[in-house]
Amino acid sequence: MSSSTSEKRQKMDQAAIIEAAMSAMTDATNPAVFDVTIICTTDDFQASYWMDRLSSGVCKSTSSDSTNNYPMVIAVSEDWSSSSGAGNGLGTLYAFQKACNVAKEKYGANLAQELMEGKISAALYHTAGKGTRLAPLPASENNNKPGVKLPVCHQLADGTYEPITVLEAVVRQTGIYASSRNGRLSVFWGDQIFVPTAPFKYTPTHHVDIMCTLEEEPPTEKVWKEKGLEKYGVIAVSGGGKGDAAQVE
Image (cartoon, rainbow, N blue to C red; front, side, top):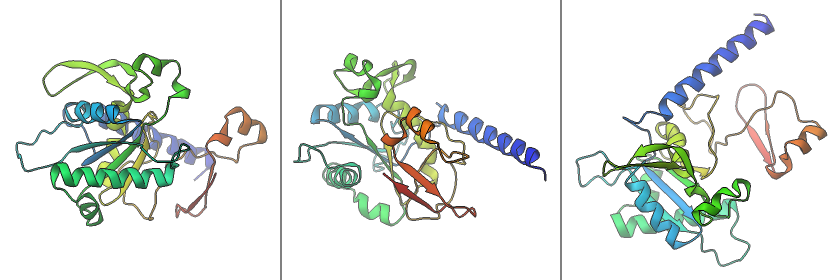
C-alpha cells in the first residue's frame, strides 16, 4: 500500500471517528455520562451550586428505581491547607477522598470499593482557579470559570431550558468515554472541550491512560515557543503500536 493511500485511509478513519463522537456528544435523548461525576471547585458555594445544577440537568437520573444512586453527582471544594495548593496529582487524590466521604454520608455508597470491583465508572473534573485563559468571560460569573454560558440551551429536569455552561458541555463531551472506563478514575479539566480523533470506545491496556495531541514530528524550537508548549509538557509515545508513553513536565 502506498503512503498516499495509507494517509488517505487514515484521514477517512479519523473523519468517521469524529462524526461518531459528535453524534454521541450531541445525543440529547440518551446522553452518555459517567456513573459518578465529581466536581472539584474553588469553594463550598460553588460545590453546592454544581451538585444541584448537574443533578437536575446533564446528569439527571432517568431511572424509576429510587434505590439506584446512579448517575451520582458529588462536588467538593479545594481546601488544601497550603496556599500553593496540592498540585494536580495529589489534588486529584485528595478530591477523590473527599468525594468518597460525601458519597458514604449522603448515599451510603462505597465509591472506592465499587470502583475497584469494576462496577462503576467515575470522572473527576478540576474547575478551581480564576480562569485566566478564559478572561474576561469568567468575570460575568463571579470568576466561576466553568459557569461561563455557551450560546445553546439544554433541558433541565423540570422541563425548562437554560444555556449550557462550559462545565456541562465538558461533562457531556467526556461522557462518551464512560462505557470504556469501568473500574477506572478519569480526570479532566472542567473548561477543556475537545473532539477525539481516536476511538472513544476501547479496552484499556495500561494502568494509566493519558489523552494528548500527537504530532507527526517533534516540535522545533520555534513551534515550541509559538504554541506555548512549555506550559503543558511533552508526552513521548513509543513506536510499535503498544501505546507506551512517558510524560515530561
